[in-house]
Amino acid sequence: MELALKNEKVNVKTIFISYYFLIFFGIGGLFPLLSVYLSDVVKLSGAQVGIIMSISPVVMIFAQPLWGIVSDYTQKPRFVLMSTLLCTGVVGFFFSFVNDYYVFVILAAILAFFQSSLIPISDSIALNYVQKVNGDYGSIRLWGAIGFAVSVLAVGRLSEVFGLHVIFYVFAVVLVAASVLARYLPKESQTMNVRLRDGVSSLLKMPKFVLFLLITFLVFGPIFANNFYFSLYITDIGGTLTGVGIAFLLAAGSEAPFMKVANGWIRRFGMLHILILSAFISGLRWLFYFIEPPLAIVYATTIAQGFSVGLFIPAALQYVRDLAPANVRVTAVSIYAAVGNGLGSWFCTFFGGLVLEKYSIATVYGCFGVLTMFGCLFIFFLRRMEQEKESGI
Image (cartoon, rainbow, N blue to C red):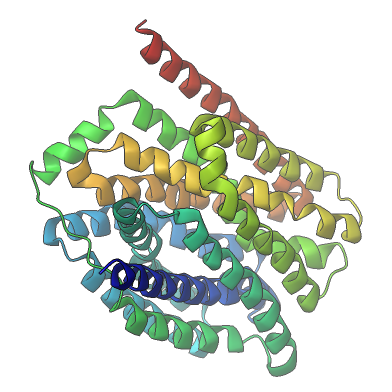
């Protein structure tokens, strides 16, 4: 019996690993190169590129909490995930047939609506599973970072050989495959004890949760906007499309080892200390890019993403899950993702497009650095709130 349970855990973990690798492979092959496609192939202006790239985050602001509520209400997150994965892949495929700016805007909104469910629901299912079996979320999530890193390099090379249209074909095929694999993820079900409306209301009345949403906005906004602008930064300082792939391979690849050790570091040093460290390093990275260092040094400093993302994501997600009532955890994760992936990413992407149009890509990263350092400061405030609660003040 014990051996059978062990084998079952290994099989489920293998499914999670394969699943995370696929969805981030799809994301990594599309979004880092989409801005280059819109700029170089479709010949859109910097402001138009910024608007299109910011459509996705602004839709996610509303769509991610909606998918979280649907998932919590139906108690069928796996079915919701399978459906939205399939729709996301199909919509992504249609991008390859479009040349009109306004059609891009519409398609970007539709794509974002379905895509906004993927990461929060996937993470909620994974966290629910690892808590049941006393597993390690970081050891599963790191395969997403590996998939992203491998994809940017591989798809970047394919784009140089076959043209940038290939990013849409790879995205569609991989996400449809992930939809099939999602069928074999474990079910996440729990008994509902209170009404969801009351649960959401209680979340927004929690000062620590609201403050953490602000932190997520300031820290995650630049991190996600970087996925759109980093390719432009690399090509602006002399890199090629393959060079973009190498840069993302180093950056995203560095996340994996840190995600592997994240759980142990969180237990040893505490979640908030890890969040402070990762946010501070992230801010330093953006400010360093503001001075436009040589290309080789930019490649070398991409490993800072391991600290900033590889540690921040597991710690932040665990903090939100621990803070939220059990019956609205998917909703809590979705609200948290909507603020970081959605509101923060929208603001930084849209504002970055305006700054790019008037100034330079280096100035965009200078702004990112300032925002992130404010986020780091607010984590200190959150830590003080936790300390006051522990001391009974």
